[in-house]
Image (tube, rainbow, N blue to C red):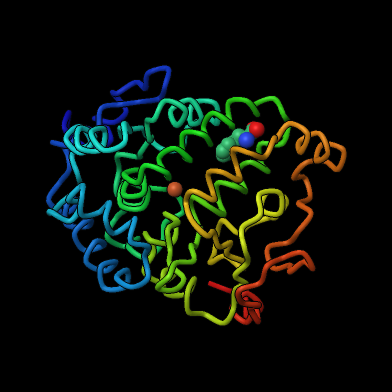
Length: 293
Ligand code: PHE
Ligand code: FE
């Protein structure tokens, strides 16, 4: 009785920062196997699609060695590369807790893994999304700095009333970002690289728009949380992403946004194309218009 997962997890009262022990020893063989199955599926689609920075991170941290990674051991390796560590949390955490972790170079990751009947899609981020999707990019020094800067920016913006606009920036970069490279367009967003179907869709479908990165534009754009994106934003480099977000003062932007109700109605729907956009591809939105998933 005492070692059932439910009892085990309920008995771990979260600390102020919401961290809990990963409890790696409690994962079942079936749970480790779920990681391996997902890992293999992704490795069929990611070569030639995921950015080299992501692939390098997977290799550097040896995330394909079999089973769910042990956070402490993985963090020791990650910390040696960029100073980041991964801490376990029970699920989504409040904004200020999330920002504080990022600002201190700690990535909060769910410690649970999806059930075998949820391999293709889950609503809540699990350990596969959080670790396979996010952690490789944290081994890239420039992207690592961007994630910390985002957390610091979040702490500064807690009382702005416009956190949803800041969330849109995270969504369209950290979760669903594309990057233009000499070899062609590639994926770096964690929400894409942890989904076999969206990895193909984001780069190859005629349906979505692919538009050049612009901070303010992203922060005014609504997004889908329940289906493939209708628009992806494309960065030139991680240096450019960091530089442009650091250089933009968000305080005056929030002030302007507040006058318009912040994100209560985002200025742009997920499918809009504006005259000022740098358009890589204009999608026909056929997938979304068919009703999506
Ligand atoms: N420049 C932003 C501000 O002034 C902070 C920030 C940096 C946010 C990098 C996101 C990413 O608030
Ligand atoms: Fe995520």
